[in-house]
Length: 147
Image (tube, rainbow, N blue to C red; front, top):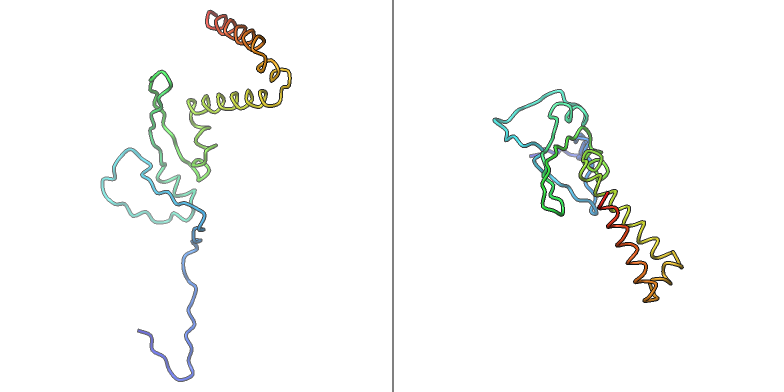
């Protein structure tokens, strides 16, 4: 309980920790980042930066990916800074995700071509030209599969 005297005014000090409030349009995600359960709580002193915390705890997680054929592959993602939690940071660590990202980029290029290529648009509108184009694509795919 604060004691006030005549003529005094309360001045609240701003000695809080240097933690910025999370904005309304942000989401905070808290998750276990290691496979091993903690044996007992550990008090670690002297970690004065985020980099020091990452260096001490070395967070990592093992993930399992499943491709379209149902084949599973396991990878270990390691986090050495906050940037490793971004989409780009996670993709850079995973061969599986790199391949998916490259495949996505290729599909986007095809969509762009379909939207902007006038000759291709005209060929797809004409039933005869469309069937000839599909037939040539199927033969190319067959040829690629044979090699």
